[in-house]
Image 1 (tube, rainbow, N blue to C red):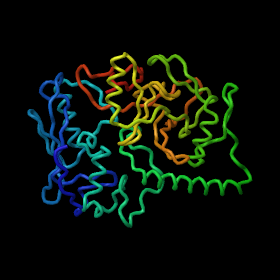
Image 2: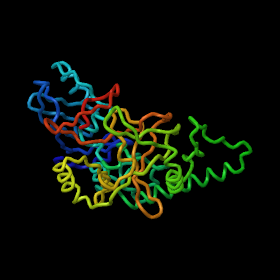
Image 3: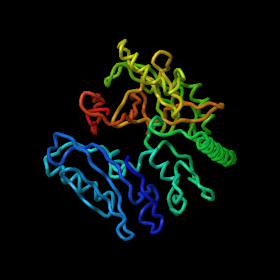
Length: 355
């Protein structure tokens, strides 16, 4: 990130429902070169104001394009790469907004804090709720699908929990007068099938998940890597499965502990809660630390507040049948060279590396 620029709320072409792209915004990333697709080069991404119309620039030493939309600029770069013989698959998580950096949590939060952000009528604020703004109508999951990649806002999380509790209470009240209530979830392979948890408040789901954990998941040998976590019964989409447990440490200790674990040839299992704290499950962890990475995950993580404490919970991203392995995307940052970590998930859309 080089500079954030100036928000142009009028006209409204410099923002949409999901993103703000201020004039003068400049960022840079390292990506594959259009001159030699086997090497990488640095690209500069910028937004300019051309008489009230946003122009999106992508520039490198061998490439330069100017388009009216971010999607068009990104497609122009991909087209040039394909013409140069570049044949790699582009994950769905990489698009024009992510390459410009406008979809990154810290960048979005900073833009929402800028003075003129409140003039962006129709923009859906995610991190900062301006005065007089109603905010989202329902609780949001982590935008990137992984809690460790987003900043933690204690007040915001409390608001989401309150909204979730209010919604579940209203549904419970309406269902009490329904003469034909929904049946309990079907049993699978003789295992205990609990009542649906999706309509419960987060705190109630947390207690229910703890109660039936041993009937829900099991640790077995995985085809992906070492040990893995498997479903013992059918799990519905959105159901809370298990808590990522371990020793609560300050984030300043993460690098030191990871270096120590590498020296003693011990794999590290650390999951960040927010900017101040992380959970180290390497020596004091639970079953959730065995959840492997996959480029086609069937689970995602979310931080909830239950019993006055923050918890990292694993949820089902889709319906999971019994005996299937539970996996989620680790969301590792992009690396190059020897820092690459091989991915062996075997998914159809596997990129070959976890980072």
